[in-house]
Length: 229
Image 1: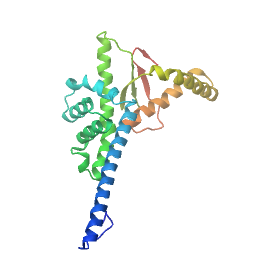
Image 2: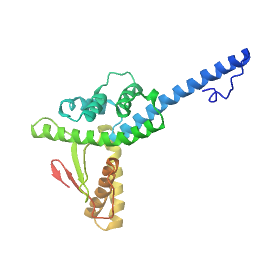
Image 3: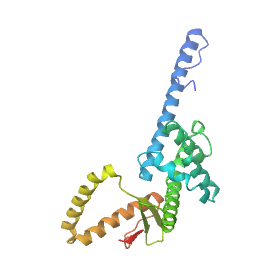
Image 4: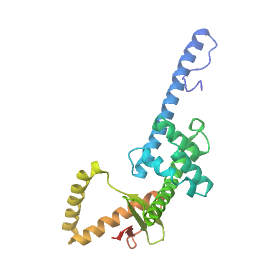
């Protein structure tokens, strides 16, 4: 730690005061960086989940607690559902602690790498559980608005996801999609081929977070609950 404060212990009173001040600054910097890191992980989690706020993740997690048997996955779902914190940092710190098996303040570089590797895997499993849960609700005749998309690639890897467009985003998203499809149609020759090409690319990207290897083989197939694309 003295090296991190850019000082050698000199034994004199002046050096001790300077050392103490620099040590305090170094500790403050480390604490601040730890907080920034947790918030970065929170942003990565929400981006991978396709959500803008943690309540969109923690809310569905509550309904899955009794459906998860695997101990590690159950701990992850419990941490996601535990939305009793005032800010995103404390919520994500709890989730990250479960992923690493230790508090973020105790991490080293290997722990951080392990969390970044496990997060997309656990989140992909969580998304599949959400999709299955929603499918069962739909089968039971309960209200259900989101679409369930399932994608399978030639190797058999599968990803299921609930998707939807927020009401305040639809007016911006639909024209952008229409413009994109029009440009693809010009390139491939027909609207149907344009839709198929766009869906294939999106399906590949949907599989990517789960770590599925993509090849130049046939494109993945995509199905949506309530209909087949």
